Image (cartoon, rainbow, N blue to C red; front, side):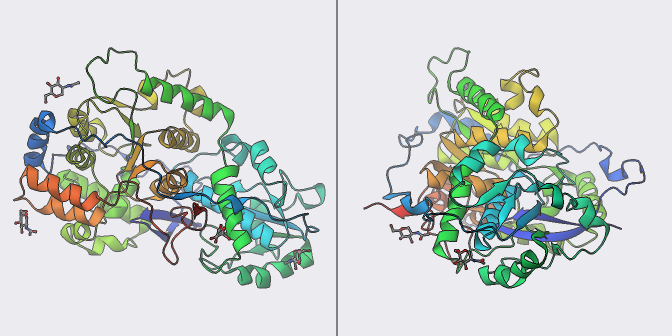
Length: 494
Ligand SMILES: *[C@@H]1O[C@H](CO)[C@@H](O)[C@H](O)[C@H]1NC(C)=O
Ligand SMILES: *[C@@H]1O[C@H](CO)[C@@H](O)[C@H](O)[C@H]1NC(C)=O
Ligand SMILES: *[C@@H]1O[C@H](CO)[C@@H](O)[C@H](O)[C@H]1NC(C)=O
Ligand SMILES: *[C@@H]1O[C@H](CO)[C@@H](O)[C@H](O)[C@H]1NC(C)=O
């Protein structure tokens, strides 16, 4: 059976798991776990929830809730621009094949540019693998503005859209069918600059091309030459923009969120909105191995899904629900995120943009959130099918649209610290935009305490979140510069 690499974001760590490819190419019918079962998620925190509903009016509107972050004394480093006077002679072509969803691929693209620069190589526009969960077949240029990408990086590295004639044999099919000497498949996770010089330079020298796969998370964040680190910042924060039609539709959505057609007289916070990333699909729910209140049917369905996809290799399933919650390893449910936002002072006049793929449990699960926040919108509620035609059925393009709208929100919050959350935290830090980073362990503990009343819960949330609403956080050793761009990409103001 064919093996595939995939990664799941988990509490800021990325756990790479090797799974058996889901569907053998034999025309199997959908496996039984795909069938829909009647799962009725019950509210898990009904007491807090009832209080939250009643408390809405009593919520003192916090005056600084919507105010933009103050200047924290940091700004994007000006030395993120090119310091090379001229490009050295190219040593050959670097090709990468990138796994994962949009945001994982985005990091891979930044790292690929850095590796190409390290090796004085020419980068071939990265190939985006089709992810078994997201199933989007879009190419790089279908998602990212390739002209902009090449223009911004033109003084940093050579980039080509396609390999020249003499190398067109170097395709993913070629590498999938046999062991090939131009393929580099042994790059360790977080490999050093030296690793690439030692192991990939010789391949370039011998063959004029090196195809690196797998490549996700294969370049370290520490002990990188300063120019390489700066280049990674430049790619992530400046060179990567979405294709014009995604940006245009994103602007339409942002505009409709800011200036709704309905009469908004008397509603606070008009013109402002919170983007909520709710990655709560079956994949995430199953992988976390937490109990989400869907009863026996849900537990069984998720266990079956785990068995089919990861064949028992999900470490989380060794822990009890309580242990997982204590460690902050359970994504927040829509109900829980609603309680978090209410505790922070948002109320039923707050406009929420739901950035998400699919919510496991569907409307039954979202309804709790909708009760607290009736003004929930998403791309479907804001734009017609005709307007969305070009992204229809494309998970990566939809994710790109959600990313764009989320970047333009006043406040961003995510229900679990996965790849989208991490990318957004980094991008918004770069521009000093307000971002709520849920304190997962603390929230897990608060939600487990069934004797807490609303005011105690609210006080606990406010205390636990006080430094997690956009306050600059300096990157720690080994953390990602794409999530924590200070101080590598964001520098102290003079
Ligand atoms: C890249 O080019 C620079 C400038 O010519 C040179 O100093 C450096 O050794 C080259 N590095 C590699 C890996 O070829
Ligand atoms: C950019 O310059 C600042 C000082 O202005 C320095 O602190 C920082 O380390 C530099 N960044 C890199 C990646 O070299
Ligand atoms: C918000 O909630 C209050 C009661 O808590 C209610 O009077 C008001 O109509 C609600 N507003 C909206 C827009 O639902
Ligand atoms: C639950 O919350 C109450 C009220 O804040 C507190 O007194 C109690 O110690 C908490 N229980 C646990 C197990 O943390």
